[in-house]
Image (cartoon, rainbow over all chains, first blue to last red; front, side, top):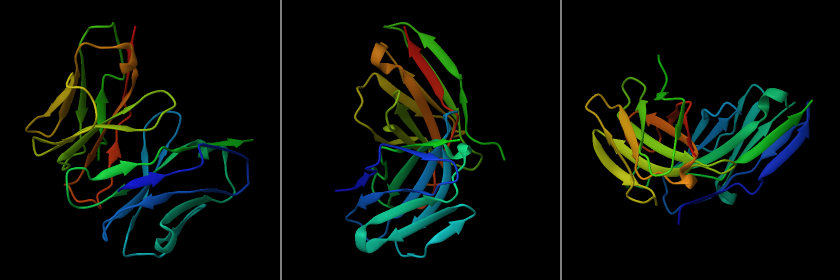
Length: 115
Length: 114
C-alpha cells in the first residue's frame, strides 16, 4: 500500500530553535518521488523540494535541510534557527510514475514558531 | 511566469445551489488537480485531468464533477451544495504526468455554504 505518515500533528517551538518534521512513507514501487510543501496561513501550498528514490543525498538550502533514508523509509525536514515566518502547515507527499492514483499527501504538520 | 490562478477567491452559496470554480494552470502544464481542504484538515484529492481527459477521481459523490478545456484550464462544479462542502478548494498543475513533476498550487477558492 502507498502511504505517507506525518505523526506530528502540531509542533510549537520558540524562535531560533531547531525543529525537525518527520515523514515516513510506504510504497511498493522501486522508483518513487518524495516532496515537501509548505502552506502558510494565506493558504497557497508552496513546493519546497523533490527527492528521487535513487538519490539518497541529503540536501541543504539555507536554513532548511532534508534527510532521506531509504532504510527507514523516512524523509525528514529540519529547519535550523526557526523564524516566525516558518509558521505554516508542512505536507510531505509521495508520487510515482505509473497508474492513475499517482500522488498522496500526508496529513500535514502544523508548525508554530513563537517569538 | 504566471502561477496557477483560481477564481473566484471567495464564493458564498446556500444549500442546494450549484457552484463553479475555475483554474488556469501554469503555461505549458497539461495536468490539473483539484483538492478539497476542510478547515483544519489535510488535502483530500478530488479530481485529476490531463490533456482534456479525467484521469482519476477521489472518493467524492458524483455531484462533484469537472472538466478540462483545450487550453488546459479547468472547472470544478459542485451541485446540490451541502453544508459540509464548505472548504478551501485548491487547484494545482504539473508539467505532464510523470511522478517526478511537482504540483504547483493556486491560492484556492474558499467556498462557504450558508
